Image: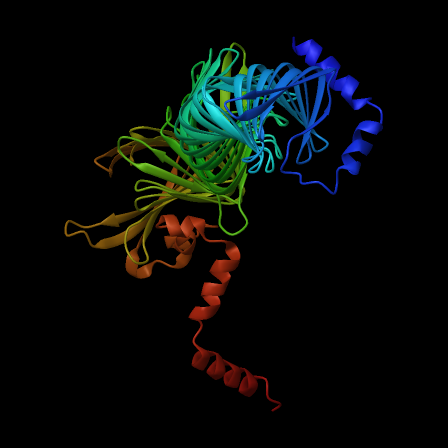
Length: 628
């Protein structure tokens, strides 16, 4: 039947111009009257003092810019009833088909029944009964209708269609179906001008295995874009989510969740104020109090971008990355999960929870989770390593870790270079460079190193310290080795040799040996503790034994020579070994001391100079250098 109506419509479009010319001939008559332009047969019958006109066979009708066609019709005053292949043509775009028609010419109102089809531009509306208010340009239905566009079809139990505005309203069991999804809701307003369906009330959207629930939103039938709000929830075969709002961009293949957004997928969990989830590669972008977790890592930040294809994580804004025994913090973090390469900028903290070690830096470049280089522009990077008895702080201009394989075992090295400083309660040190072997707990100092433990100072070309959770265990001084122990304002016990090896307990020396050109100055005291003399001994090999930090015995090997000089007769050569210097001004006493740059120290020294003193010294220099 519909095919017949469409064929008739095509026939009417090709109809000779006489039909429309005849309309022109009627311009002088009133358009309020229904005009029968043609019929094959005509009968006029009088019933109850009313004239009825019966028309049959290819009936053509005109009223107020509306053409109507049917198989047969009857008119009474300005009322028309027609049956059989009903066609209505209005304006250039509107066509209506049906099995029967009741038309009120006074009210400009039409009722069509039986296989009704309304075509308006690219929109088609189908129903068993359609009510057309021509004056208002609105059609309505009360018992199920289907609207179809180029890309989608919509159905409901009741509704109305504003032809002038090209907007349709649907009520009760509303269903939208297109190639992308199926949508069910209570109420919908479809704006054909922008191909947008706005829906209200509990709404259910199905897209393959995916399902969405919301209570308000819209769907664009042309672009495939959609927006869902109020108690939104998304359920999929592998993806579940919820938020205050969900937006779907089909062109970008992205789902955007806003407001307390949560996304769960195959062992992953994402939370943020706003989440963008890309269907094609499962890439996810989180903004605002963002959190992301999968089997490999756990991430916090203001902004998180996780590329599932490349397995890269970008974190911006006070970010934290947890992975295995590693915790990484920074203002900006870029990390590759597969290669473990990454870079971090701004207040970086790299924590090794397994070894209770933290690295602080402005910049961090990672080759992997074990190898990295840290450097800073405004402050120096430093390491904080905690043990049961003490906490060690180590700073340098650059810190680097290297992982090497020693046979079947791995070797972890940490290197610091240029202006290296170390501070802990039990030990302090300075050097040009340093290497820390974490496997053996060995710290090697190079480049004019100096170490202090309590009142003891260690100096050599190279110093190696064995340190563990109990503190310093051993100290090795190689080449030009010297140890000094401060006894008072000007007196020191001093030991010098090519190599020195000392063992400590609770940061106190308990045994020590000196090899090669050993020299010792040992200060003698009386029973009241007053200094009475300086004893100097020269020997090739010497052993020292201590108890409770006090020297108890000395063993000299290979023909030692000794002499003692009373304190009141001793000169500097008697009191001090050659090249002995007590580097008190270099010793770091706090974390702030090891973090200062050299230019900051020079600036502080300059600020401490007394201006008056400078002026006086300048005057003395002028007097001294004045011509005689």
